[in-house]
Image (cartoon, rainbow, N blue to C red; front, top):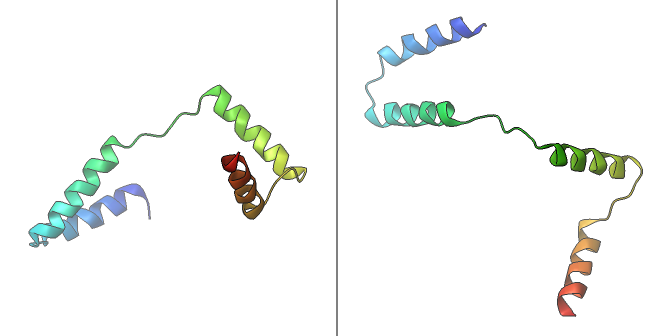
Length: 77
């Protein structure tokens, strides 16, 4: 189904909706969709992600349990 077909289907269904609460929820959803933007990563964020992927690739990782233990040790100092 292409974009136009989906929109037409939605319009057809909306014409018959009498539930004010549902219509308000749909309006809120559409307002949120208008304001949501795709986040553009900064160059340093892209570099950090690349470094993270490389760490994962070469096994330079730590388990969550080990990380929690290190945090507790650090906080107790």
